[in-house]
Amino acid sequence: MTHEIAVIPGDGIGKEVMPAATDVLADTAVDFEFVHAEAGDATKAQRGEALPAATRDIAADADATLFGAAGETAADVILPLRSIVGSYANVRPARAYPGLDAINADTDLVFVRENTEGVYAGIESEIADGVRTLTRVVTEEASEQIADFGFDYAKQNGYEDVTIAHKANVMRETDGLFLAVAERVGDERGADYDTALMDALAMHLVMHPEDYGVVICPNLAGDVLSDMAAGLVGGLGLLPSANVGSENALFEPVHGSAPDIAGQGIANPAAMILSAAMLLDHLEYPEEATRVRTAVESVLESGPHTPDLGGDATTTAVTAAIRDEL
Image (cartoon, rainbow, N blue to C red; front, side, top):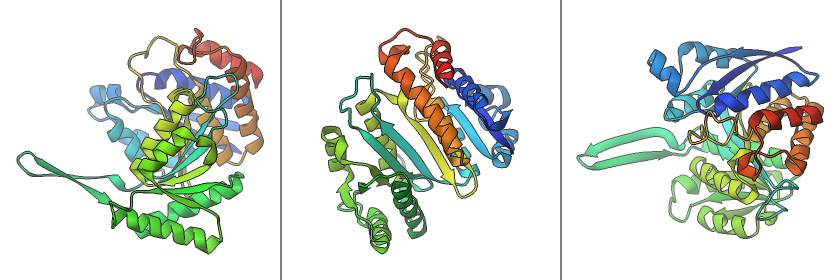
């Protein structure tokens, strides 16, 4: 079977790390057809829109999408793309790898983030001069869907510790609903889980990340906590992510377009390649996904390393090393 993959490099280092991911995927035993498309700042400057209709159609029709990074137009690109593929769950693993300086070498976290609502619903208003509001949307349906996904993910991937993050002591109606629904889902399954106020959880994750496994989060909390976890394991250059829908999905590194290093050829390709490994899992090629992850982990342990990890290797050199391992 040939799998059609939409390839959208985007801006900045997205253009530099994307070839690493497609080259690694091409080295596997899976048959891929890569369909390239444009989006981002440069696309907006050239065409007047950051996400052209042709790119939307390619992502909608593909079996999955690989996305690199977006610059100033991020909200105009990545949020619509997540919607186009029907994504309701954002999965962000954060692991400590041998050979790298991690705050805690036992860190192995997965943030399962609600991906459709919360403060990212985009409902903002100026109600008076100098007064602006943001409407936070939380529904029972979306809360149940992300809780189901999170508990399923933990069971399927061998995580015993599940934590539901919330701020229901202050946001009593919205996070109160999210918490109540997630607890109900856990109870109906007979699952073991804990709940934690997201601010206190942030502190405990830094101090004792080894005590946590899967963290089920509302949208904004998942965004913030997963970025914080990147600092525990060595930086955003190591964090992949998956945006999962019922029939389609989009895979992207957690890092942004990094304009400070864009064009220098020193971007870390690990997160992009690990995102490609998540794509292989999604398409039900677990053995190939494991091969890719093992190759990345071997190079992270022994080198070469890009400057963000203390080395002086180029993106191309690290990619070549990973392909050699594969």
